[in-house]
Length: 317
Image (cartoon, rainbow, N blue to C red; front, side):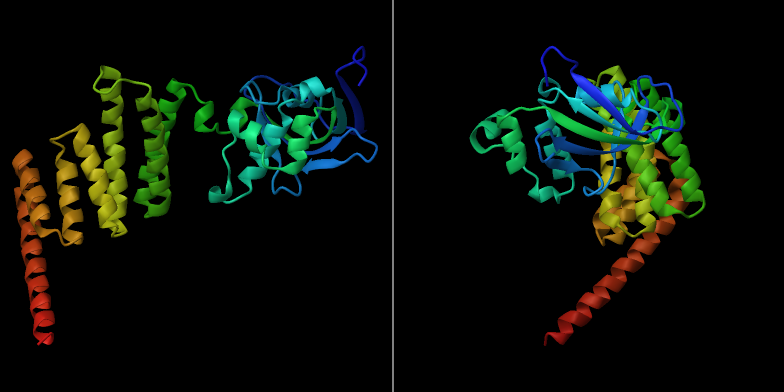
């Protein structure tokens, strides 16, 4: 491209149906083809053959600034071709690698740091050639959808800390509603997602500082709800794991002791189950009748286990 000419040249192939205003947070979904600007218009990438269209959220510092610029010059359902100066597409080989790698199984993906690029290249021959010989690129873009920030549910990484806390509350309500309708899988998904958001926020705080403690207290009921769902699925070791984590944040959590006792009973850890049930009754005397029933069931379980073991032992001789 002539250095004195424009850095981006647009050619409309198909007019759009609607002009939509763009702002930070707008999500644009589009198909794209990337060609070299050589005589053969060599194809580098085609999103249609890579499995899914590209999604771009404006204002989130995407690695390829030029894509943010050109999509904002387009209307909904428009198809246009953009020839972009090589100075604007220096990062394209790395963006392309990331997109291509996402289609591979995780174990086949290869980390690409500066030293790796210098010694081994990017990992794709055409991208290595493009990296070593920067040149103008041509993008053919078809806009599929344009959604303003209030028209779609944001991913957690797009949210502010306050928005994340609101999301946690909504997810907990969704999980509770799903549990009430016996949709355990949906409840588990909601509780797990909410717990992950809390963990992200906790990483920003110093352990045992007031802000960290407040987040930990929000995490406890999510862990307990998750463990209750796992109890229904008879995944006893997951129950034990999540209740134990809850007890790290609240060493006197009655529900965690009682639920972990159920988990240990299911896993045939009778001594540990007995200790957890008894601790729950110490912390909450009103639970003593319930705990007495659980201990009686535990004793019967252990008796049956002993009978089974005795029979197995006799068969050996």
